[in-house]
Image 1: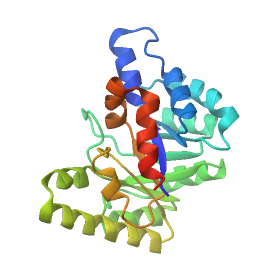
Image 2 (image 1 turned 90 degrees about the vertical axis):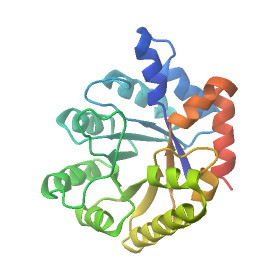
Image 3 (image 1 turned 180 degrees about the horizontal axis):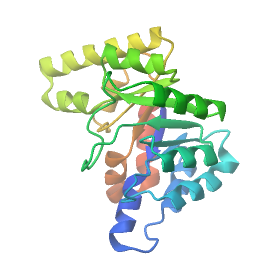
Image 4 (image 1 turned 120 degrees about the horizontal axis):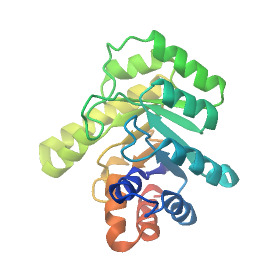
Length: 245
């Protein structure tokens, strides 16, 4: 069974578009937890266009009483501000992702030729603080090997290529499933846990979860978008019915 971690960034995006505190990011977390969500993810970007540092700390306080059953995942690029947040909050997991100037959302995983020393030191610092570390990578052997060499605990596989292949179906889908299945087995053989995320939704998730060794899926945009029409608690339940199969 894969754990579901709900990325609530889009709630903050809507709030920030108008100013003030509506819709409440904290209330969104409370609804997700009440519906049985086993994980909450936030991605505080440097430009603060959705989740802000204060949100990170407020959510941490709110989750303190349920940390035995709800994991907190902070993701972001390893800039000084993010490092400070992680070391102060000590979430269950930190997912390190590359950030490209001007990107709207993550566009790819870390390249396998990214220098290791600085990231290795940051990962070791987080682990010493009791934080599990995942790194965001494309589903190919080279970046997975790179992640293992860094000393990461897990990889998060970038799943947008799978989502596009699912839309095409046929050979494209079969090829993508083979690619991701190979990546999952390779990471598992290296002793890495396996997370996945980006453009997963109610339609493509069941097929993806047939792949081996997946520990966690992170879903935000599709889940929050559907919640506008059916309610946040209900859509959390819909996803949980898939991940608990």
